[in-house]
Image (tube, rainbow, N blue to C red; front, side):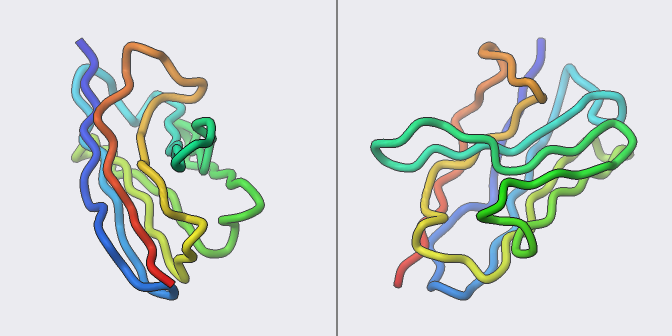
Length: 115
C-alpha cells in the first residue's frame, strides 16, 4: 500500500522560505516519477514541480527559479525547497506520482504566505 506523508508547511512572511518533505512508503522514489501539487482556496489542484527517476526536474512558470524539487533515494524522501515565497503561493501542498494516482493523495501540508 502506497502512503505519502507531507510535512514542513507553515506560516511565513512574503519573501521567506520553507522546505516541504514527502515521506514515501510502498513506492520507491528512486524509480518513480514524482511531483508536488498544490491547491489554493477556491482553485483546482495544480502541478507545481516534477522530478523523474533520473533526477530531471520541471517547474510551472510561476515558481521556476524560486522552488527546487529534489529527492533522497536512500531515505525514500522527496523535498520542495521554496524561496522568495509570495502570497499567491498560499495553498495546501501535496506530493504524488506524476501523473498522479487518486489513491495516493495524502492530507497535504498547509503553506500560508502573509503579505
